[in-house]
Length: 337
Ligand code: GDP
Ligand code: CA
Image (cartoon, rainbow, N blue to C red; front, side, top):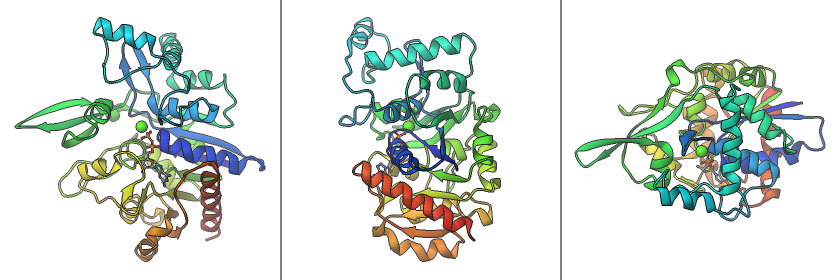
């Protein structure tokens, strides 16, 4: 069985760990298409936050307590860069993490595509999954904010980390999206899958920057990478999504601000309806909401999405594994229809 997950960073990685466990006794392969909208050039190196979060989590190297980066990290190089006034003082790159970025940058400078560089970095670890960046092109999410009477445009990571998503958003920009195409292997991973899963990731800045997400009330949406949404719409595999929103709020992080910036409500029902039924030009055959959100089921069913209410809190590895099993059986039921 071929399973393809479309994901952001830390939230998606928690689910990916459960999915890998759920598949371990089966003859299955796992491909993970990862958001690259957070990528950037910083202090001379290419940083790919979501790819790295996913690689570190699957390799068991992540700092679970802090929630990002590598465990046992030190920050000697960052301290030197700070002393030179280089980089972002509020965005620390750990020494071990910098090793990853230097290795990646070396490969990119040698002419490898990001997908090739990613495969080479991942080959060092036993990930039990193939990581594929959504695109090999540099498509970065930038944020146009309103500050007083003026506007300021900053990289997504600056808005997220420095302003803690507090700077009011006029719109998100996906710089370079017009001319971008899916990375090698992305469309194939979706087309040849037996099951496609949309991770419980930020619907705007993690999945939206891959699949597109519309704005409402005159607000701009994000276009996504041309061709990936179409691949999901066309695949013969059932497509199941897991809500990143429980009881009207994202479990962790600032997805509410992202949805608000697009004029969209923050609820499991709304996000499911916006992703939409594949039967009607959308992305989903099936949508998992939390037991707390079971009131959303009738509206989702009425729109042609097979919806189910199951526990969505991934508070430990076993909860993630059970959620992944629920997603796989929902996909199986959707395929039977
Ligand atoms: P990021 O790129 O590191 O921000 O990670 P993602 O975009 O992949 O995931 C972030 C999202 O994960 C957050 O917006 C939350 O809504 C969601 N999330 C985090 N923990 C959980 C959980 O335990 N259950 C569910 N259903 N969603 C979660
Ligand atoms: Ca991210």
